[in-house]
Image: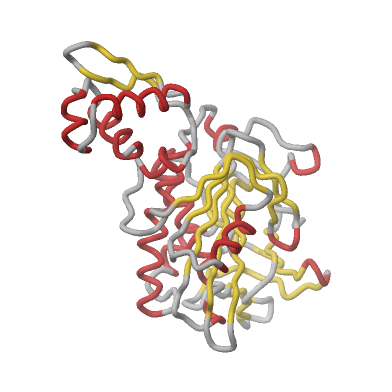
Length: 329
């Protein structure tokens, strides 16, 4: 009821009568009044006028389950939303829920994360009230070797949503770093539980630096946020809802073929290093895979790199550095 009530108040833009709300939800005026008080306690500025009803005057930048669901335009993705004020890792919580039989599309959403994990085992934590931290549970009926492409879908969904909601021309550094002007805005981590030829579940965690104003010195040169790029605060709930909406579309397209044949051209349009000289490494092994001119990805999500001898190598995993940017000089 609270999520739908929020949606009605926000979309109305004017007073909504208490009687209308009572009839729509089949509850008493007292029940509506109690929900309004709960919203006020959560920071919503709601005006109540006799014979007119209720009007929402100001919406706080909160990222609760109810605020997110009031903005969701998906059919199933994120509809079952688990909200936690503070968690060590949304991925860890999503895996726990998956083991208990949680439905596909379940979303774990946190206001603060203290022990998140990034790619290559890096730590990724985020303070309260600044960023988007969420993990989606999927149960795709695909072969395990195809699951890595889901990470690329999440990156595409994030770029689509950022561009739509903010106008910022964010891009992707292969495979899944969302960046703008040389700074990383978003990190994605995909984990899965499999059998030999099937997947029990996949969890895709995403952290978007939205309203963060400063970063620790050790990452200040490489990390950025939407606030630092645009000079204004961005409503996190609308951005998060947009990511889920875009991902639902991308995911359903992907399942039709189990590859990126219908999507790789759009992905390549987002790539910040297409046509540029790159170096691909395996950081944990300190091993160079190849270097050359990046030519985008194929339908399997592999990066095509044209080497100095003219041959093309297709890379399925690794860390990309771009000549003059992202650490490659």
